[in-house]
Length: 535
Ligand code: C2O
Image (cartoon, rainbow, N blue to C red; front, side, top):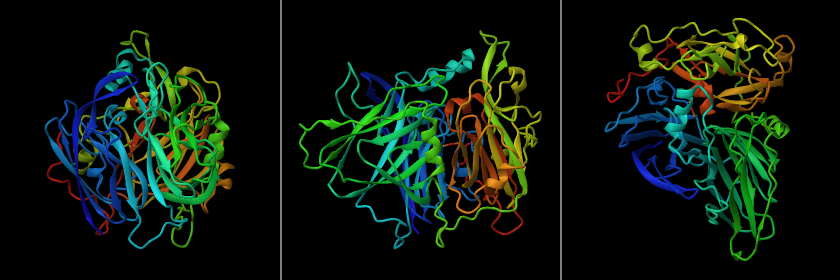
């Protein structure tokens, strides 16, 4: 294993998209940002230097950070922000991990422009468990706002109402041709006839789940969230913010040009940027006179497409890559999550859109939880996060708003080291039945079951897949339904769990697990690095 050193310079840079320019926060002036390469079992050091007038932190989404929570990155959860003019070195091992992940800013809405790919190659001499591709390509999907993203976020803070949706989607930084603005194609994937490409697809958008298609071509999905899956064929990839998907693409069609496109998925259309972003797959030696073959994307509310994609995901569960699903459960939790409306005397409209889990709207502390835990600083958080709904109700039925009035709190759920946990993430349908991509820091988990309606604690567990459930770090709560996950709490620290639709996180759809140290020699949080920022 190697030690890899990276330097991330946080700088303002002007970008022009949709025929307007704006100054935005970037790493090294790039959008998307630089790719971080490593090999399984390497150690990575990233020195982040903040040269912008905003506080920042970087999260290495999906890196397990075994005992190194100080390098996980969510602001006020594991660290205080890196202030203007300051720097901080993130140090972590990529032990036992290989595949595609992403890094992104983890404070306010900065990840809209501050994100990039993480590629972890298998150990030297260890092949992929699928046919070796001829080439590998990174495809980062995102969103574009004409205005400053901080201003967009503050719309809610000030008015209590949902903020504006984005003005465009992007593929590797570009929306593609935009009527009355640009004919530029933006990104082009050049392919050679007969060759196979491993696409490392990342959804780095803030607020939108996406469909991804290439005209006339099929994909073979081989990995999600840096965990291998049993290969399956599909013509449409469904990918939520925070998720990554590796898929093989073979250039097996007539040489020519084919549209690559993304469009949003939203089951209940509340507020959405419905612009399609496009780019092109172009066969080499194809001249520019050949017109592009178009494709049809699923409807915005094509929930069945998302369900069948999710249901196709199975872990490899081979001798080399076994699925170590916990079979005996110490903590069985039911988290009811969703968006609602609270009374708000200080808001112009008298109410405020909020979100929560088990009627708790998580309030960000002003000292990092991990520091408060490590140094025993009292008064920063409480350990009474409810593991089950306080007042059960018909989660997916019609309910009066009074039932989900949330209370504010900075509450964590404590777990003993190495205990096993099952969490059923149940969506509610208070404002509208919506799907939610939920990300857990510090762990991969197994998705053992999912269903529509209310979770039935007697009958549903009988149908759980405990043999080859997909392993990942960002699950999907289906529309008006539930998803059950299992994991082992073998990573001491404070670990954030939240909706990866940033707007829902901002509204409070988040909480944290506090995993105690174990008694063994390598079962405690390592001491904090000297340059850890202070609040
Ligand atoms: Cu990718 Cu806490 O986030």
